[in-house]
Length: 69
Image (cartoon, rainbow, N blue to C red; front, side, top):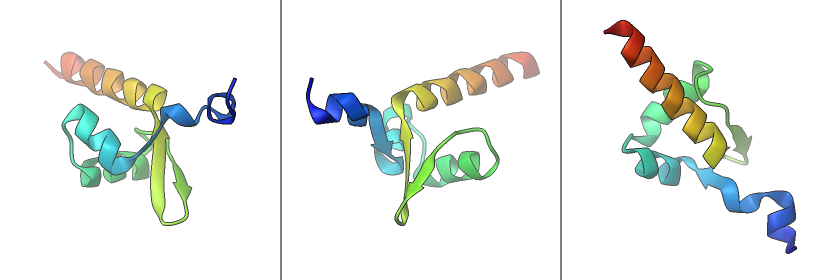
């Protein structure tokens, strides 16, 4: 097991990369972080999140839209 696998670093995404993965803007993800919809950590000046947190955010958004209709 490599050090990166042990730390789980393969799952960490910067906001730009995360936004590109789900077709949103980094500004939208910063809003979601600020309002508690997306869990992330600040590392230096940058926000990072994980693939799992991004999937949970997308699932929450899908449920919210479905309930609204």
